[in-house]
Image 1: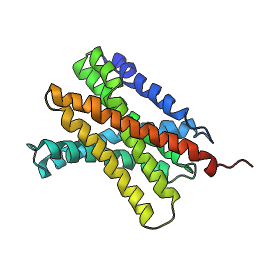
Image 2 (image 1 turned 180 degrees about the vertical axis):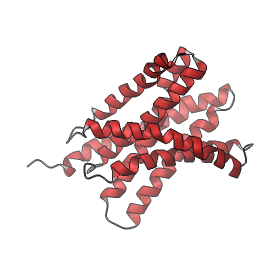
Image 3 (image 1 turned 90 degrees about the vertical axis):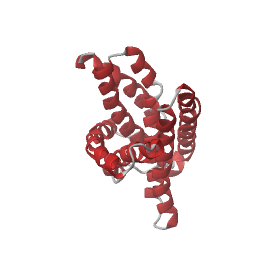
Length: 225
């Protein structure tokens, strides 16, 4: 598939899911410029992953599926997506948990867009891209969205054990969901179904619950004058 076809097929689903997440931000919507910046930084983080991955593969046994899924792939990718998120998490515009979800999902979808373009150019299979639009693309949004939520919670809390627990817990949760998805997906058909019918729905359910909770709390961060 040519690059001119790969871009709309790869980016289009990501833009749709990003719009769907953003429209749940009921109070003091985030500037689209910053949301686009989060997606762009998430896309750029793919280059960091490409640089780091060979080093991780040398450090950890390549013949261990668990290490490959959780450390080489999940930890490597989520840490770089977090690095892309940090500048936005430090901005004053992030003043409620829902903002962390929006920026986190944007970074994850920016990363997924580059992956989709890569698969489009090297595979050229439209059916595969359509499958990714409802599987891997959503998984990236859910994992990094949950990570952004937890780091927003950590930012908004005072210094203490609770703050550190949110920051570390966000990374652990994102890596656990991402690694579990990749671990089972790379197996036979039965194992792949575990990823698609168990891990992915769990990730999306947690993501949806975080959105619902964050929306219910938004009024506390933006009280009516």
